[in-house]
Amino acid sequence: AIWSGGSLYFQGSLKNVSITESYFERNEAIGATEFGLGGAIHVYSVFSASEGLHITNNVFKKNRAARLGSAIYITSFGSLENITVTGNLFEEQQLTEQGVVAIILQTSKNLRIIDNIFRQNEVESAPLFVESNNQKITEIHNITFIDNISKYERGYSLFIKGRDIDQIRVSQLSTQKENEDKFGIFY
Image (tube, rainbow, N blue to C red):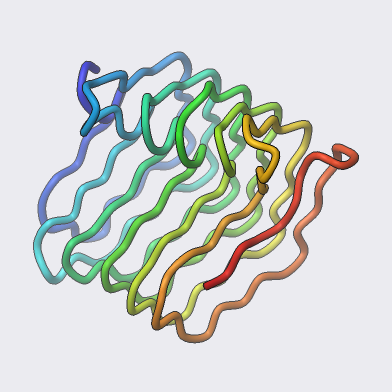
């Protein structure tokens, strides 16, 4: 795609959207400066009551986005509740500004990122990038980072940024590249 969502693009109010057991390879969102979002999947929730987005047991390989989310980009300007990104493999995603998975939310509840593997991805800052204001209950659990490359010295495996974040739980993160992957910035 020229602008956003190389394979799938969702816009509007979401109700129980599931993307399950799919294979996304060599999708691109290369767009202009303000676009290039979500190499394989771009979710843009613009209305207030969106609920239920589940991205489960998929393979993302060699996808690319010019700006955010070489595999997945999720953003919301209203309330987006019950988001799960579970059991996915993210492999060999190509250079992007922020995140193989980039999630930027205004108001959210129940964000769960569980049992994912990030392997041999190339990004400018972090393979997993979460930014949120007014976030309730975030769980990031059992994530493995293997041989990821960050363009910047300050590169991290996980980057969390925001304000008014309530009840964040991060557990069982592992990295398998010596002196390359680092965890977290929280603020």
